[in-house]
Amino acid sequence: MRSTRRQALLAAGASLLLPASALADVEHDQAKATLAAVLKVEQTALVAYEAIANSGVLKDVLRQFLDQERQHAAQLADALDNLGAKPPIPPRRAGIPGLDNALQSRAAALGFAMELESRAIAAYQAAIDATVDSNVVRTNAGAMGTDAQQLVILRELAGLNPVPHAFETGA
Amino acid sequence: MANERSRREILVASAALAGGASAALIASCGGGNSKTPSTETVSTIQMQDDAAILNTLLDLESSAIVAYGLIAQRVSGRNAALARKLRGHEQAHAAALRRAIPRLGQTPAAPKTAAEYEATFPPLRDERTALSFAVDVEDTAIGAYADAIAKVVTDNVRRLLATIIAAESEHAAVVLGRLGRPQAPAAFVTGPPPPTGSEGG
Image (cartoon, rainbow over all chains, first blue to last red; front, side, top):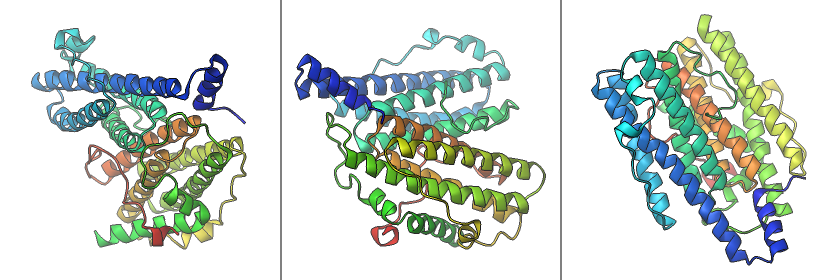
């Protein structure tokens, strides 16, 4: 029978004679860190997709994505706020690696967006793993599913297999 | 729309009936209180609850495998190839669930016969009806997994369910595209509404 993260934490806490409240703090911090990490990816998508769409590449597709990413970012900011954490500062366009290249061609933009969506899926899965609030878990699962659907759209536009894996783990 | 609703209701009711007590567990676990105590251990009872949830999902996957077998016979060309591929994915999900349940100290439930599952399916008259049924199969799976992931407490199980929800969402997107419908129609995938207590119990 495999022990879970919570059991491991408790075992570690017992050995160090840590109070239960300290263990709760560890989980609280993990939830905040992972939710902030997802929000950072969503914020990057918001800035990058706006820039790419404004350049005229994948305009219609990315406009639809932007509306959905805004809703994802808003719920993540709310979840962080409920945990007493501030959202990360959104990145500047110049600070997003690969964005300048993504503005050069449709193929480059598709590659950039697919990589971003894959990172988002992986980040959501880490957050789902670390979060204990079941409402937040469910909402994040819903957002992750939509990002996976966006990834399918991008793969098809790129002429790739839209569903290459039975288990989607992202990056 | 009425037809779509009835197909989903059939699928959800089928899963609930097959799950029996398991479905009741899904409906009742953690109900009302959204916050699990953050420092609790995963008790034997909680592991049993998680295993029951996985057994219900396993039945849903078994149903999907049979459904895609039937869909593959009703569609042609690249849609048939897609149905066979998605059937393979559902088989992989079922296998993963079958491996996970013993790790929770329980035994995977045996699937029903294909005929029992088929008896709950709507008639698949043509290619479009068959693809629409595939969307319902995926929507039902997404709803069930989303419900389950909010209730399981075993961390590695939760991660497994997350990777499957993402895959089922991708399946839905591809099939929606084949139907000429929006492939990412909502900001949050949710599947159909969960069954009420009377439907699930």
